[in-house]
Image (tube, rainbow, N blue to C red; front, top):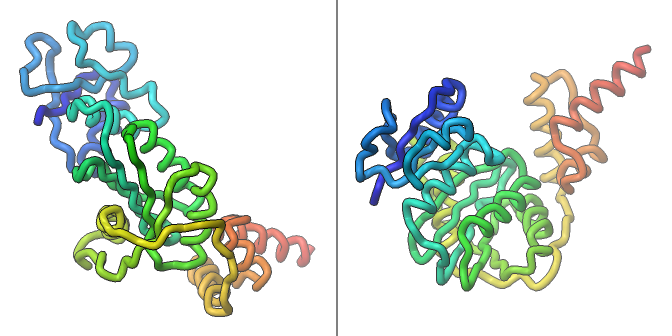
Length: 258
């Protein structure tokens, strides 16, 4: 497989590209010159201002996409040279910071994670655009029931088959970072068969779920405050983030003192 090349005099862009490529462990070559680009370079990531300087069709302006990760995804697609997949499976490891992976025709195309369950649907939409397929299936791990159901309910409008998968056998090495473990688990989930989702999933938090969110609020604020049960329910349903809930609680306490 050919390699990604980087050529830009924009230091900020160059730094951002290196950061993403290193984080995702994608091989690359930094080009000091655009003359006589090596044959092993399949695509050159550059800026939109420098794109016209490249005397090749291999150039890709990384700063015109919504993120550097998005630009790198497009570069990898160019390297693979595949315009349509037979089957694409998207795996999701549910949690407060879900892991997401996409597998196309038995090839792991990408794995990543997001900061909240509500961000999953936008990443899935992006994957669907970047990896068009004849057949596409979304698979979600069975753990973290409330979070899992929140994620599934945001995905249902996409009108794609969704399965809930037993993720008990997808544990990754404890030596890797939590975010990497989540994305690795998502890659495993993508390849496992599960039960089909027929309708929207219920959001019925247990007393344990509520206490867990309240404990998280105490941990984040170093014991200064604990959000109410009602607010914890709002967090669990996805109506408000835990960070917003804590800020609101602080604001309410401040006003009461005044």
